[in-house]
Structure formats: C-alpha cells, structure tokens
Length: 309
Length: 120
Image 1 (spheres, rainbow over the protein chains, first blue to last red):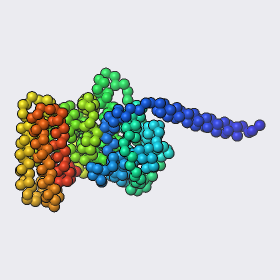
Image 2: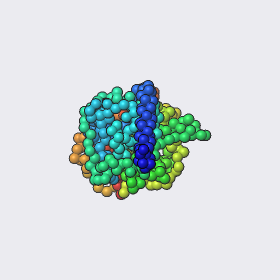
Image 3: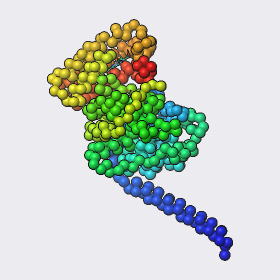
Image 4: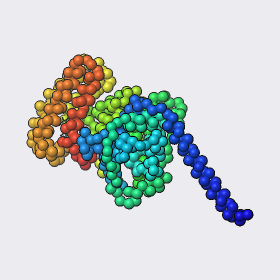
C-alpha cells in the first residue's frame, strides 16, 4: 500500500491528465465542428470586404499600388515599436496554406498561432473574436482562393519585453475578453447587423478608439478618436457628438463616405481609412453600410477633440 | 482647392440624397474640370511655408504635379459625361474615379492632416 500522501498526489496527477485529455477532446470536437461547415467563397469575399480588405497585410505604403496582395511585410508603427504584418497568402511555407479551419479560427478569435504562440495585438483579434463560425470559415476559404506569394515574415523592431511574444499572455489577461453579442432586444435587425460589422468584422474601434497605457482599447472612450492611431495616424472621433464627433453627419453622409471616401465638405480621405474604404467597405452592399450608419448613430456620444500632438 | 471641395460636396449632396436637380451633377463636374486650368497658375509661385498644406514636392516635381492636374481634369469630364447619360451605375463609378484623382494629387503633394498647419 502506498502512503496516503503519495496516493493523493497520484490521484491529483490523474485528475490533471483527465482534465487535459478532456480539454483536448473538447478542442478536437470544436475543430471537427468547424471542419464540418461548408465554406462559401462568394460569401467569404463579402466578409473579406467587411474587414476592410485585410489591407494591413498588403504593403501599399512601402511597395505602391501593385504590392503583392496579402503577402505582409507592412510596417505598423506603434508606441511599443515597429511590427510587421504577416504573409496570409496560401503559400505553404511562408503563408497560411497549410492551416486548417480550426487553426484559422484560433488565430482570429484567440490570437494564437497553430504552434500556440501569441500574436501581437496589432492583429485586431479582440474585435475578430466576435465573428461567427460561418463568417470565419467563409473568409478563410476566400483568402485561400487568392494567389500565393512566397515571402518570409519579418521580426518586430521593438525593445524587450514588447518584442517577446510571451509578454502578450500578460497583455491578454488585462486587455482581452472575447466578444460576445447579445440578441439586441428591442433593436432592429439592421441595427444588430450594424453592430456586428462595426464591432467585429470592420473593427472600426481598433483604429478609432484610443488605447490605454498598456495598449488595450479604452472602453470608456469607445470610437471617440485616437491621436496615436494606426501607423501613427490621427483617427477622428466617430461618435454622434455634434461638435467633436460626426453628430452633424446624416446617415446618407456616412454611407456615401464609406462608398466614396468623400466627406460631407467634399474633401477626400487620407491614410489607412482611404485603404480600408477602397479595398473593402466601398464594395459592400448598401444595406450593410446603412446598417453601420444606423448602429453608429446610437453609440454613446463622447466629447473628444482629436488634434495632432 | 476649397472651391473644388465645395463642388465635390455639392455633387455628393445631389447623389447621396438622390435630389432631383436636372443637369446638376454634370454642371458641377464641368465646373470642376474647368477649374483644372486654375490649379497650375495658383501654385506656380512656391509657397510652402505658413498657412498652406502644399508640400515642396510640387515644385521639385512640377511635371508630376501637372500630370495629376490632367488626371483630375479627365476624371471630372468623365463624370460630367456619365451624369449626362443618366446611367446611375456609371455615374457612381465615375464619381469614385474623380475621388481617386484627388488622392492622386493629395498623397504626394499635400501635407497629411497630422502635419497640417490647421493642426499646429
């Protein structure tokens, strides 16, 4: 007979293993469920556009309008250093051609690579975590249908600890809760669709919401504009505040803006916004753009004048 | 430039609100195309300091700047023609083309708003 302490220790180990196996079984089940979903490439094209065309993965600023689509290598300047977007073409060695549906879903929802490494939050998975299974699978199928391009990923140019992926685990504890949407009781279908697009797929807040010192989105200032926006650009306040936001824009103004990139005063759009419009939002059906306008008119109005520092 | 912006805003108002202004879009578009002739003289003299968002590249690359004016003018004429034909799809496309021609000049030759004198 083994001493009691050893026995309870062994029991503990067994329970732990059982839990691990159980967890693994759950993960396998989830993976099988994802693999069982039939992908629709056409629908995937629409999801792709609703993300703004994944334009951060195409190096337009560095390589011009003919930059290889989705091959990554685009520099993202942040207060924590320079991060480079990754190759998401179907290239088997340097892209994501070997990924399964479950791999792609885990990256989009949990910010984890197939090897279990954390992605830096320049990749907006906190928003994408709200995407539906079907949208994720369709989007993956669409991306896999684009041309493959061989290009190695680039390591970030950031000081420690920010260049260390392990530090992202701590960042996630503080800043990341997967997005879950309620049924939007009392709201129209268009409003719920608009919320889904704005908050998840189109990830407007990843650029338009200012960040806290630790680089998480500041929920109390949702969509109120960011001085340190993406690539160091100013992202204006898009809450319905009259003087400092877009409260003076009509819904038609906003739909037109997302289609044409032209503001109510006739001026055009600069920076990343012009890219997400041109390669994404502009090609969405008008019903989607109207839904976004309907939702945005109802988000909390926040006074915040965004000016260059 | 603010005149160009005003015309662009007016066309936008007509199209996005589907206002019934016969010939309105084509009129504004033609005015914009005519205004192309005024751009080069307005920028002939180098003035890149003070209350302006013109970049010095305008004068270091004057032929590129003139090419951007030409592209803008033909995009405005294309919009006038599309609007006159009454084809809404073609008009939308031409509008986007004209919008792109603004960026074709603003990207290389106009200071981004982070550096705009209005933000200083």
